[in-house]
Amino acid sequence: MIKVPDNLMVLSRTCFEVIDNQKIADELSELATCLYERAYKAKLKDRTPEDNRPEHAIIVLRNTMRICWHYRQAYL
Image 1 (tube, one colour):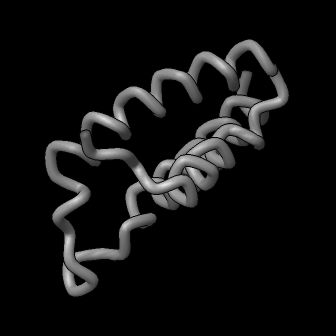
Image 2 (cartoon, helix red, strand yellow):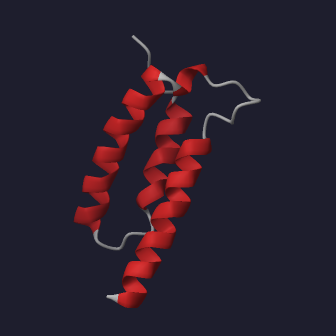
């Protein structure tokens, strides 16, 4: 069984720290964890350093969540 490395799982939980509604943050984190585990087992585990670092997708998600949450706060 392929397991996502612990450091990537810890990093993935940081994606939702910007969200100040704990219920929303927890639900999104749970969904993201399920999706990331599937993606990791299917493809991401095989990425080479030349392709992207292992944490690349998680960092992109974290930055996207930060932008979206700040936008939501500013315009809703």
